[in-house]
Image (cartoon, rainbow, N blue to C red):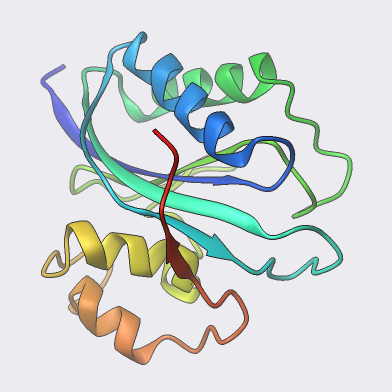
Length: 166
Protein backbone atom coordinates (compact mmCIF):
# COMPACT_ATOMS: atom_id res chain seq x y z
CA UNK A 1 0.00 0.00 0.00
CA UNK A 2 1.20 3.52 -0.79
CA UNK A 3 1.59 6.28 1.73
CA UNK A 4 -1.94 7.51 2.36
CA UNK A 5 -2.98 10.81 3.93
CA UNK A 6 -4.95 10.34 7.12
CA UNK A 7 -6.55 12.83 9.50
CA UNK A 8 -6.79 11.78 13.14
CA UNK A 9 -8.49 13.61 16.02
CA UNK A 10 -7.27 13.41 19.61
CA UNK A 11 -8.98 14.14 22.89
CA UNK A 12 -8.07 13.78 26.56
CA UNK A 13 -9.71 14.91 29.79
CA UNK A 14 -8.05 12.77 32.50
CA UNK A 15 -4.58 13.23 33.94
CA UNK A 16 -1.94 15.26 32.11
CA UNK A 17 -4.04 15.87 29.01
CA UNK A 18 -1.28 17.43 26.91
CA UNK A 19 1.17 14.66 27.79
CA UNK A 20 -1.44 12.01 26.97
CA UNK A 21 -1.86 13.39 23.45
CA UNK A 22 1.90 13.75 22.94
CA UNK A 23 2.40 10.15 24.12
CA UNK A 24 -0.19 8.92 21.63
CA UNK A 25 1.54 10.91 18.86
CA UNK A 26 4.86 9.25 19.77
CA UNK A 27 3.31 5.76 19.72
CA UNK A 28 1.81 6.46 16.28
CA UNK A 29 5.14 7.74 14.97
CA UNK A 30 6.88 4.58 16.15
CA UNK A 31 4.32 2.47 14.25
CA UNK A 32 4.35 3.64 10.62
CA UNK A 33 2.06 6.64 11.13
CA UNK A 34 4.09 9.77 10.36
CA UNK A 35 2.89 13.17 11.53
CA UNK A 36 2.87 15.78 8.75
CA UNK A 37 1.01 18.64 10.43
CA UNK A 38 -0.59 19.13 13.86
CA UNK A 39 -3.17 21.73 14.85
CA UNK A 40 -2.98 23.80 17.97
CA UNK A 41 -4.42 22.29 21.13
CA UNK A 42 -7.92 23.44 22.10
CA UNK A 43 -9.62 23.38 25.48
CA UNK A 44 -13.24 22.27 24.98
CA UNK A 45 -16.35 21.58 26.97
CA UNK A 46 -17.61 18.00 27.04
CA UNK A 47 -20.49 17.16 24.70
CA UNK A 48 -23.26 14.57 25.20
CA UNK A 49 -22.09 13.34 28.62
CA UNK A 50 -21.39 16.71 30.25
CA UNK A 51 -20.65 15.73 33.87
CA UNK A 52 -16.90 15.42 33.33
CA UNK A 53 -13.76 17.62 33.08
CA UNK A 54 -12.89 19.79 30.09
CA UNK A 55 -11.07 18.17 27.18
CA UNK A 56 -7.98 19.08 25.28
CA UNK A 57 -8.43 18.32 21.57
CA UNK A 58 -6.36 18.59 18.41
CA UNK A 59 -6.17 17.06 14.95
CA UNK A 60 -3.26 15.97 12.83
CA UNK A 61 -2.51 15.08 9.24
CA UNK A 62 -0.47 11.90 8.93
CA UNK A 63 0.87 9.57 6.26
CA UNK A 64 0.78 5.81 6.66
CA UNK A 65 1.12 2.59 4.72
CA UNK A 66 -1.36 0.89 7.07
CA UNK A 67 -4.78 0.20 5.59
CA UNK A 68 -7.77 1.69 7.48
CA UNK A 69 -8.48 -1.48 9.47
CA UNK A 70 -4.86 -1.98 10.53
CA UNK A 71 -4.73 1.69 11.50
CA UNK A 72 -7.86 1.26 13.63
CA UNK A 73 -6.33 -1.82 15.28
CA UNK A 74 -3.16 0.16 16.07
CA UNK A 75 -5.20 3.04 17.52
CA UNK A 76 -7.13 0.67 19.77
CA UNK A 77 -3.84 -0.93 20.92
CA UNK A 78 -2.40 2.50 21.74
CA UNK A 79 -5.53 3.51 23.68
CA UNK A 80 -5.39 0.23 25.62
CA UNK A 81 -1.64 0.51 26.25
CA UNK A 82 -2.22 4.00 27.63
CA UNK A 83 -4.86 2.65 30.01
CA UNK A 84 -8.02 3.93 28.38
CA UNK A 85 -11.16 2.66 30.05
CA UNK A 86 -14.62 2.82 28.50
CA UNK A 87 -16.85 2.55 31.54
CA UNK A 88 -19.20 5.35 30.44
CA UNK A 89 -20.12 5.94 26.80
CA UNK A 90 -18.68 9.36 25.81
CA UNK A 91 -17.35 9.60 29.37
CA UNK A 92 -13.99 10.67 30.79
CA UNK A 93 -10.91 9.26 29.07
CA UNK A 94 -7.21 9.77 29.18
CA UNK A 95 -6.95 9.34 25.39
CA UNK A 96 -9.34 9.13 22.49
CA UNK A 97 -8.10 8.81 18.91
CA UNK A 98 -10.52 8.90 15.99
CA UNK A 99 -9.95 8.42 12.28
CA UNK A 100 -11.66 11.41 10.67
CA UNK A 101 -10.50 10.95 7.06
CA UNK A 102 -8.47 8.27 5.32
CA UNK A 103 -7.41 9.51 1.88
CA UNK A 104 -10.60 9.93 -0.19
CA UNK A 105 -12.08 6.66 1.08
CA UNK A 106 -15.64 6.16 2.33
CA UNK A 107 -16.22 3.01 4.34
CA UNK A 108 -19.07 2.02 6.60
CA UNK A 109 -18.67 -1.22 8.54
CA UNK A 110 -19.88 -2.20 12.00
CA UNK A 111 -16.61 -1.07 13.64
CA UNK A 112 -15.21 1.55 11.25
CA UNK A 113 -16.86 4.50 9.53
CA UNK A 114 -14.83 6.86 7.35
CA UNK A 115 -15.31 9.79 7.21
CA UNK A 116 -16.04 9.79 10.93
CA UNK A 117 -19.84 9.91 11.29
CA UNK A 118 -20.00 12.92 13.62
CA UNK A 119 -17.07 15.15 12.64
CA UNK A 120 -19.40 17.68 10.95
CA UNK A 121 -21.35 18.07 14.21
CA UNK A 122 -18.32 18.81 16.41
CA UNK A 123 -16.55 22.18 16.52
CA UNK A 124 -13.84 20.54 18.64
CA UNK A 125 -12.90 18.64 15.47
CA UNK A 126 -13.85 21.24 12.84
CA UNK A 127 -11.98 24.22 14.34
CA UNK A 128 -8.63 22.41 14.54
CA UNK A 129 -9.28 21.06 11.03
CA UNK A 130 -9.97 24.58 9.81
CA UNK A 131 -6.62 25.70 11.23
CA UNK A 132 -4.60 23.16 9.23
CA UNK A 133 -6.75 22.47 6.14
CA UNK A 134 -9.44 25.16 5.74
CA UNK A 135 -10.09 24.65 2.03
CA UNK A 136 -10.24 20.84 2.10
CA UNK A 137 -13.54 19.46 0.82
CA UNK A 138 -14.25 16.08 2.43
CA UNK A 139 -15.43 13.24 0.21
CA UNK A 140 -18.90 13.12 1.84
CA UNK A 141 -19.84 16.77 1.28
CA UNK A 142 -19.38 19.58 -1.22
CA UNK A 143 -18.47 22.10 1.49
CA UNK A 144 -14.98 23.07 2.61
CA UNK A 145 -13.92 22.71 6.23
CA UNK A 146 -14.20 26.49 6.76
CA UNK A 147 -17.76 26.39 5.37
CA UNK A 148 -18.61 23.48 7.68
CA UNK A 149 -17.33 25.53 10.65
CA UNK A 150 -19.56 28.46 9.66
CA UNK A 151 -22.69 26.29 9.47
CA UNK A 152 -21.96 24.15 12.56
CA UNK A 153 -24.75 24.03 15.11
CA UNK A 154 -22.37 22.95 17.93
CA UNK A 155 -22.65 25.63 20.58
CA UNK A 156 -21.66 23.36 23.45
CA UNK A 157 -18.00 22.38 22.94
CA UNK A 158 -16.82 26.03 22.64
CA UNK A 159 -13.20 25.32 21.52
CA UNK A 160 -10.57 27.79 22.72
CA UNK A 161 -7.01 27.62 21.41
CA UNK A 162 -4.45 27.18 24.19
CA UNK A 163 -0.68 27.33 24.47
CA UNK A 164 0.94 24.00 25.19
CA UNK A 165 4.00 23.36 27.29
CA UNK A 166 6.99 22.12 25.32
